[in-house]
Length: 263
Length: 263
Image 1 (cartoon, helix red, strand yellow):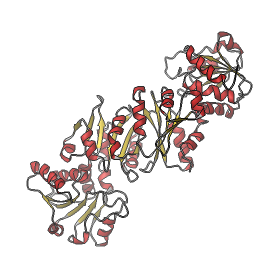
Image 2 (cartoon, helix red, strand yellow):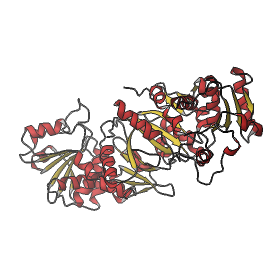
Image 3 (cartoon, chains in turn yellow, brown):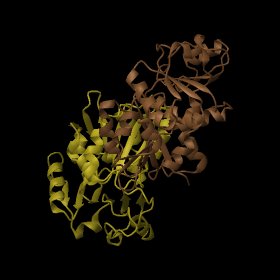
Image 4 (cartoon, chains in turn green, cyan):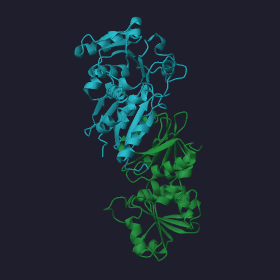
């Protein structure tokens, strides 16, 4: 039952039909007795800044979550950035402080690692192939390294993005991030799709799981469909798989704290 | 369960905690199987135009409802106005057409009359005292006249607003609207509070129900609290009363049609 006193959280994406955060956050609100509601907003990139500025004037707004393709722009829009957002150069959560300033956070990396651990997957000491050096990839890489991943081979057709991710990581975890090459595929323990490929029915696979060694864990961050073409192909090859939803479910508690929505 | 595919309706007010439209519309969505959600937005008047402009860029937005104090500004903001909105000079609903233009409607008057009729109260031939010539009063007066009310005596400390309402009505219902005076109170059949007085605990009464003749119906448009101080005082005097919620419940079907949200 949504009353006039409800606090508001919005999830902004383009597209937005695939987002699962409203369902998970609203379930958390119900469980915790929080008078709040989370709704999707479909906003195209050229309109993002206008919409965020206007949301700053909505007094019962408590927070904004952002998904593809808005995470880089949201980070740039904010007045202050957490270490995780700064490091990733992208934000998936904005909180408007009482003084009207926007604080950016990025829970994708933490959520991804927590999701792996919750499913019993080891991160420490693992060699990882990360596909996609955009907003999600730049959030996941430092969280994996922080959790003890041995190395990350980064694949992205945009070499400047790969270099930027590597340069950022070099400062804290020297020598553990490299540009990925064909030879890496057969030697890693975990292959992560951090691109949006798989959201649309006609999308190419982000990589060919047949090139992976047996036992390599194939993890996706795409949540809708739950079983992407990549996960389906990996499972058919007998590889273990890890669904995108785990990255989100690992973030819900962090959102509630960040937005001040715990009872 | 709110998914990423939900269509969005927002209710904008200042304050907004009192609004009942989200509860009623969400119940209607559930009943009709509409994939939609209605949420409150608390927006101060100087920010209204920015927020409406930004909402125009939210692709899953299906409509906006407006309450105090935004109805006049919303009518002015729209690109097109219905006859009811034009006549009232105020709007309580905005629909963004596929071409991006905003259409203004005002269902307050129709909802108020429907609410009276649904409760078995006759409008035809009745003499009415209307307190408040703002957005709500200007919407209710033509609907009452259209439904056959014999006369309306209008009370508002802002005489220019009374004159404006009378001038607008004169064109269609000559001689049936007058400025109200003390002598009117004992002679009318229905007294309507169309001011916001009663929303806040310390508010004055919009008029003194002790000055009304026995049997005069006292109707309020304030919905929260359900029993306003005015309705409480009238009931204590033995007068019949009519709650504000009826004006809203009579509008729900019209909203659904206007926003194209019927399944």
